[in-house]
Length: 131
Image 1 (spheres, rainbow, N blue to C red):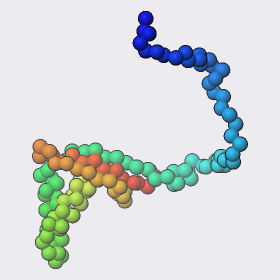
Image 2 (image 1 turned 180 degrees about the vertical axis):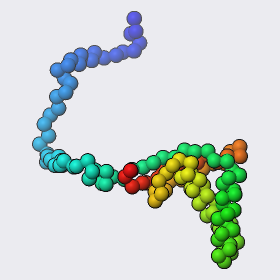
Image 3 (image 1 turned 30 degrees about the vertical axis):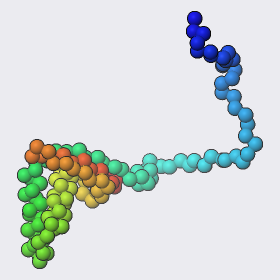
Image 4 (image 1 turned 60 degrees about the horizontal axis):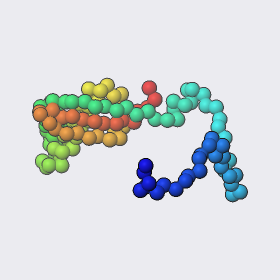
């Protein structure tokens, strides 16, 4: 019926052919030795990550950023775009922590945001002490 395909005869693969591999004669790797770790010790070994995905009104972010810029200028910092940009990022970070309930002392690993329709959509990852 399908003579134009010219498919060669393929030997049938039985279950006997599966799961058998030749033994390697090369060097063998020994698996690492596992040791038991107490539950209290395990929480101190690995940092925990908290992820925050929040939406913040743009007016709130601007007010907080302006407050940071004014505070910096009152201490003698010259007015610059860098001053406002750092205040803006600090405002986003603080408001994100407040909105998501991130514990004090958490270190921000990633911070991404986009302004859309008078809101900032913020996504951040924080490394926290075990809680």
